[in-house]
Image (cartoon, rainbow, N blue to C red; front, side, top):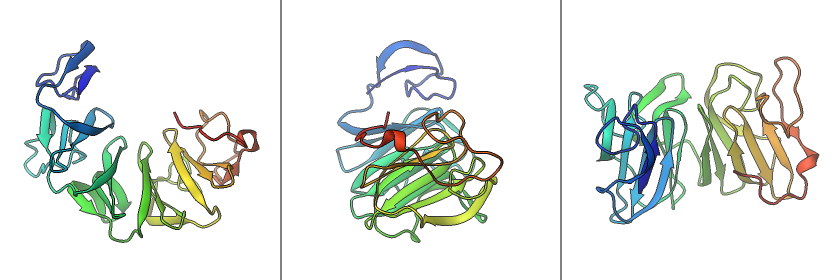
Length: 239
């Protein structure tokens, strides 16, 4: 693994806080087959015993490294995560939270989860046991998306821009199943917007992010599903 760029939270994993303008190898990491970056933090998985390592900003528990005494609020070198699952299929990071998807369809979460009113910051990866068998995950800045084995979409977290498919509000408690779109095969995001692809190759947008230029402009505060026909026929739209 090589890293470069800003390093004010130790997010380069080079045991210091110095900015780098060219790639530098992280010597302590080997046999890495998966890596994901959040806002000022990174998490990777080793092929050896499925161990995860993380570094950078951990003030909200997004590295899955216990911070009860705030000892590890910022970590400038790779450190083994606590309680991360085995058989990890995918890792996704938001601004301050992390999702882990296992090969047997379980989703684990840590950080500022916004999962419900009573569950905010989780310092070690924890199973979301209310979800069915999940095949794909993604994270926006402050919201999360999961596709289940029957190609339904589940979302949770911030809804400030309507990215959960409901009228715009700061947050909505609990998991939400999107019922009016079926056969969802892929998900992506642009910050505070959810982008959905269905098996019939239609693209939908949830949210009011003005920077998503291919979606229909919305008026007022009602954030609803929008189908952009201009993208019909495109197979790959994700950056």
